[in-house]
Image (cartoon, rainbow, N blue to C red):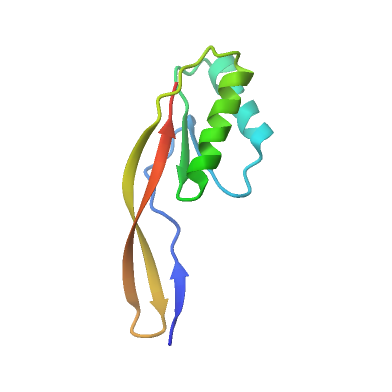
Length: 107
C-alpha cells in the first residue's frame, strides 16, 4: 500500500494584494498587511484567499480587517472550485484529483 503525498495547490502568479491564509497565518499580521496595502500604498482592493478549512479563517480575518479599517471597506465574498492533485507513492504513482473550494474577500 502506498502513502498519500499532497501537492501544494497550484495558484496563479501572485500580486502584492493577494494574501493567502494558512493555519500558521497570524491574524494581527494579516490585519496590519491589509491596512498597509490599503492605506499607505493606496491599493483599491486586497484579495484574501482561504483554501478548504481556511475559508472560515480567511472570512474571520477579512471581517477583522474591515473592523480595523473602521468599515471603510466593503467585503465582496466569492467562491470558486479548484482542482487539487494528490499522489499515491510508490504504488505506480497514482494521481487523484480532488475538488475543493476557496473564497475571495475583496474591497
